[in-house]
Length: 193
Image 1 (cartoon, rainbow, N blue to C red):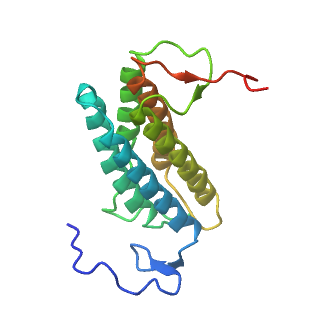
Image 2: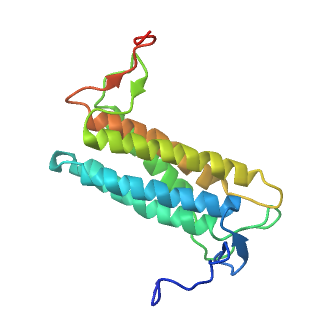
């Protein structure tokens, strides 16, 4: 169980932070960027949940599970493993069943939607707009995590990479789902020429 008695430690005042292992890294280190952007995604999902209506309680429950998963992912990213070593025993990590659940939930939400005939512009209902923002942030997190996975001496497990890739898909479908009554805001190529 986590217990925080003191919020500030002054340990990061010089621009470094501690990973779970105790190793110090600069705050602009790729690993710190990765779990920081996952945290930002989580916060954006929290804001989106404020706009979810009671009619979409099932979606809200899905988003709550995702927020919990993102803390697991953040813990995994904050616990480095070397490219030539396995995971630390007992450490939190994303597992394939979490990826599988996201895929099932994407399919469940998508079944209620008409096929797309154009790209979707971020917008529509407030909930959809917030979900699109969370999707864009999660895509940035994915790019950073992929860069981390390919950095010399670093490693990221396959389920974590798959989860963050599916997450942006889920958030896209969720945004369309909350717009299902009012309709998506569609891109019209060249409309403002």
